[in-house]
Image (cartoon, rainbow, N blue to C red; front, side, top):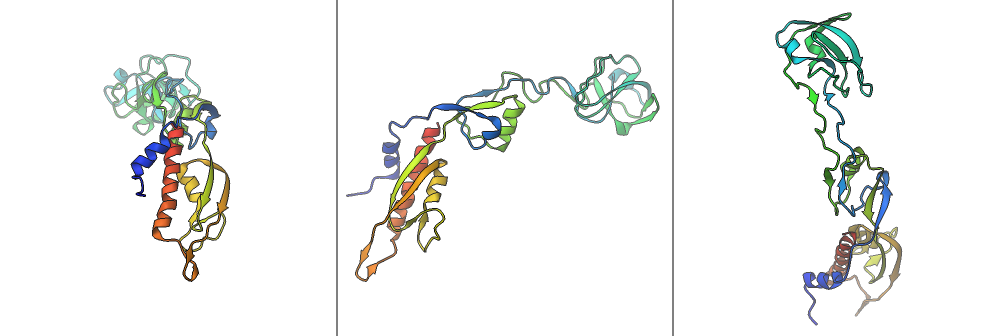
Length: 253
């Protein structure tokens, strides 16, 4: 009997296979899992205009001509906004990630300044918006940044956390039971002999969790007793693994 083409065999195996149900997992446990639904941002990032550099928040019109003399009226470390307003000829010391104070519209980096107590000399002009990360520059609440069906990698998990998701919907991991036959197949942990295939390779290629492995031994008879499997027999074992892997992908959705 002729062998089925790979495409037709896969089509038969996958016929009727449907994605597994979704479950919620903590974002810290989501690496390698497959999203079951689109993931939209729950927050805007950055939530406010912030400084991209260490320096001074000022009004661009006050530093259009350099040098310019300003008075420092406060300080903005990251996470502690300034509750005042920057007025004419005023400046606020600001650090990277600090929220741009009201009234300021640009940042002068510290390397372009000279300070003596509250007195500040700006040695180079700075245009409106210079060194400012605008509100929502990265993304805005409601933006879909991770689509359903995506297998989550390191950067995806980090993005989901930045989007303010404590948990994410993912497809349940398939549990696959294998009944493998053939002397060329060995159990995980077994020292493989020449021309053997470790069952763990099939499990890994499927991206699934195998709950149990069992070996059913067969003997290949030859004129002088047992023999090593042929290339065709090894190809059949690898073909099994490919079918299992494709099935697991469809189950993941």
